Image (cartoon, one colour):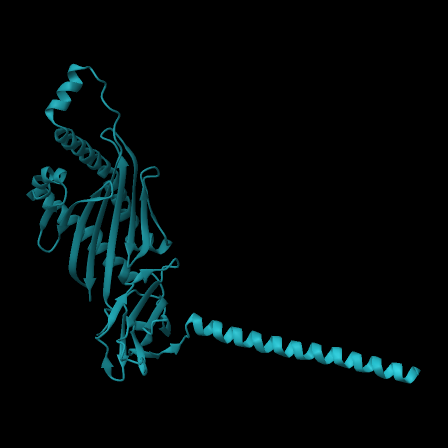
Length: 340
């Protein structure tokens, strides 16, 4: 159950918007352990870093070389869009194209396409463990490469015509060089020279809820932690809980570049939910730490308590008012007797 303290992930996201004739938008966002470190925009043609030390770490020569390569990529992406449009035209069928020609219809305006490329690599204890490339077109999965197997899989009919190019020796050599230099080596260089973000321990909240139908649910949330590697599990005494209906949110990013995770479990009807702990394993906590449950009563009980308190308050106020009225009446009678 040990956490992956030496695990790191580098993700490079390419987003291209254009037609077969031109690229309207082309930008790149670079994430290391889900924290943005670099970005590139077609309009500025500059590779920018979130922190100045990242540029200093990578060096001016590397930055200039990378900017030139990203500029050269525009021609490749434009070629991709042209070939994509050609494939779509073929799928329209020769009959349709012949009719367009015979009736002298004007050609339709160019169609915008959005291409997304996700290239990522992972290392653990400074050793490369995995890499993958995913391509999507207009929000649909186009093709994917399993880096370990070296196999491209076409996920759309239009992707099949690209397979001979993607699997060619030239493209394979260039792709492997790119992933090594710009994904793995860049990640290692940044990690060796500085940390992306100061480590922060998680804030843990553990609670128990009972619904109106008697189902007991345990909830454990950890938030505000960095790095993202964390393990949460339920424990009763020394036994790790495996039974019951369990669910997890997965590790999700917060706005401040920290992370969040929540796990819940619905207990079996015969389980009273006593002596449960949420065990959290994070590098900043040292040894795994157990957090006991803080019981929260359901809303129905809360309303019952509220109504009871209001009833008591109203009763006290009524008694006080009655006492004041009685006192005034008694005082008035006493004054009348004195006047007589």
